[in-house]
Amino acid sequence: AVFVTPAGDVLAAPAGCMLELAVAARRPGFAKSGSLDGWRAAVEAALAAPDCPHWTLGLAGGFAGPIAARVGFDTCGVNFSGISSSGKTLAQKLAASAWGSPKLGTALLQSMRTTENALESLAQASSGTVLALDEVAHVDGRAVGRMIYSIASGIGKARMNAQAELKGRYAWQTFVIFSSECGLEAK
Image (cartoon, rainbow, N blue to C red; front, side):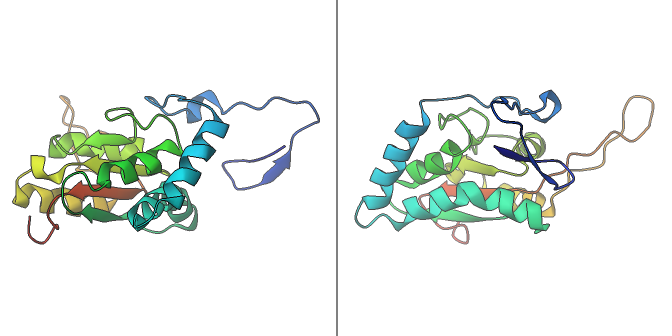
């Protein structure tokens, strides 16, 4: 087994050594769901489905965030739009499933029904992975524009505490996947 240190060094683990993610690197809200073999079988079935290229893009999106973060790219993403029940949310679940439970509301798959301020916390929690925001229809078009601009910036608003001192700012590098029944321009 090998692992990569925060500095980017690749180290080999001694034979028989069990490795665990450092406690400080664990992400809150991530949950194991199923088995690796079950995930592989589900992914293979999704990739084999005819006329569903968005499922392939969703799965690839689950791995775009760590690559973008590692090479220092800015936050970016994609919007899946189309008729109801066409598999947009399933594409988002495929992305989130690479990191944990694909259940809506757990860690990486969230409803777009959120505030602009809460979005900063969600983006930071997804840093280095993927943030799937389902149902853009929940948000006013102007707010969607502000939210996209905010997410793309990679850094949250500066805020003060009660002592008029600057608080720490949220920061992130992630890949965002939106879903909606209409395109973002129309929204």
